[in-house]
Image (tube, rainbow, N blue to C red):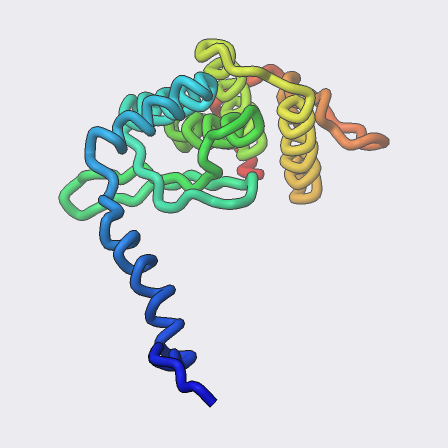
Length: 201
């Protein structure tokens, strides 16, 4: 039998032959430059003008009322509060979803609204909730953001919950603007809206 003059290739030799060109190809790949990153961001902005509007609104509202976001929530819930320091300074904080659509924007602006109207301006918690939501809707109009049916439902559900909670806690008189959110079958005396409410409900 005639012997072949060609060397015998092992499996490892074949792997090395395949891996070599791939490794060289990966080595030639250059990282994205700063200009390329900027161009990519510009393309995204041109592709989604509504997202740019939400981001602009978010930045300006936080700056206007000197609010810091402690956490961006994944859910469509939020909270607003203040921290008072010994030197007299006040930190205004919120947690909310990042505004990327009508509902998340409404919730974000609602939390900003608590700081805008001022904590304690309305002694009734449900009345403060109402004015925070009215602030949210007014700002959505001002920023030309869509107030969808889902946003309207969110406001209605939130206010019905807040009023029902106040009634359960013993609220006897309800400001007239909150009457539409009174639970069915509940009779309660109405009053003219005022900041001098005695019941903290």
